[in-house]
Image (cartoon, rainbow, N blue to C red):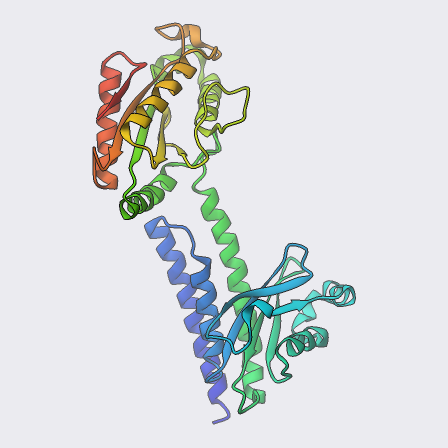
Length: 351
């Protein structure tokens, strides 16, 4: 029986790592954001699985790092969650920051956890990233028995693995976010659009709200590149992107979108703007104002364009009028944009 906690702990470590890798693979395959809460709950479930009837708790540090607050628990707590805090005194912080590698054995941290729960038989370990405390893992055993020596022994490496997994999750989430940003404009990219549009349509359908899509294209972009060069073309795309990213209260911008509107760089000279809670008429008005603002802007190299100025064409599709799903609304907006281009450019066409 003495080996049972050790075997259970090793099994939990293996399950925890496999579960984390499966979540990462799903994010990569389905192009979805990383769900931190899913990873956190998996970590707590595996930690609590070492001791039958126990409760595992994750606490995260405040911005200044002086207080740790409840983030998640594997099971309902017997105490008031709103009153659960761990506070680090200046002396405690100095001890911890000077010896981050010994956090698991520092008595001051265990004493704080014991004081918070009124029990001295719980397991406590700080989570450390870049030599600073970012959180804490606690395991509260059943009241009818304390933790055994074997259970304590296996909890430490399991908690250390959880620390590494949570840090890895933050790194992966940051990389995933960066992979959804266009380097040139700082806007969201095609990958982000594929993830976001189904969610926005689902929300619109659930609440019975309209949603519109603007599919924009800089007219005669090939001619601009040929006459002005790639560097000038990149500058043009970057400056045009500022119109799509613009928000109210900017005097230097002739046109602006709402904070809730979602601009995306879709292709080399193509952009999409998702307009939540916007019917077709509202989208048409916004698209015409955008086209007028671009036409009146003295972009560098505009003289090389057939009309002597930089212009855009915009195709518009709306939910539920034009389409009912993500594929249909993009196809409808694309057809409208194609028609606008065929009409000579500098046009706004709605399905």
